[in-house]
Image (cartoon, rainbow, N blue to C red):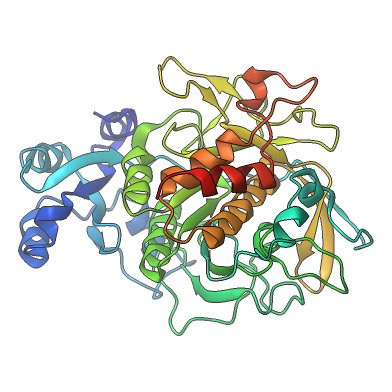
Length: 410
């Protein structure tokens, strides 16, 4: 049993669970399956969903159902007691896995300061040698990147042509209808979005894949965060994303998002997740799963940043998190109201890799998620002064990654 489920049941007698349905079974008769499983979930005054629905903050906004269904992910999430959990576990013909729902939070920058756009090419882009890929005609055109964050300022000059789809998931986890114009509830989302796909401003480049498009959603922070994040993931998968960029996670090792990370890969979606900003000996889930492409941060001298999380796990496959590092110190990018800010964090490193993946996928549209990831890994180098325990495979190189990808079999 998930540690989170056990802990919640002991504390309150109920637990929030995520039920992964067997794909082949769901496709046959989803209505009947949902009906058969829904009876095992309960509405409870003790649940966060009920508390939020009856609070002054969200009262009248929406209801708190016992269970929700996310069709594009093929999962259900709801509240169970011990009896309901036991009953769900007997449904082995339709239930592939059951996991908990630990508290998830944004991986906030360690520093942020106002800046002016002065450099022709942002140092992080130059460090990955991305311009050499641009010169070959690749900008990420035709690739859709999922961006789950605090939103994105769609009026910013660097992003007004970069947003294909936008959604907001309210504090109860429901999609806001009609969809608002793209906006940022903070500034974090605009910053990460522009690192992925920001367009050049007056000849000055801040986005790694300036031809890619974003499916961006507000999923954090506040409210029933798990419902918000799952809602955003389901929405983004439904839009046809090829890459999912998330700079959020659970502190420490929690296996509860592992089935979802596997689901993404099964759908040929590359999960690119920040590893965390809590320093050596720490990491965040799902960034510390070997099934995710996890990213730590380095500075312009290729030193791993002091804040960048890193951890060795007792597993044979991919024991070190993060997998790689990318520029994450003094990173200039867009912020709401036509501003620019320098920020430090693995949240800034992660979108560099999502942008790189978009460039590679344009170059080889029929590539698999494993081929894209392997090309990035094969391009990595441990720079002088980098500790493998902190940097994983090291920092990638865009031209080498492209060469590796084009050599790989289809």
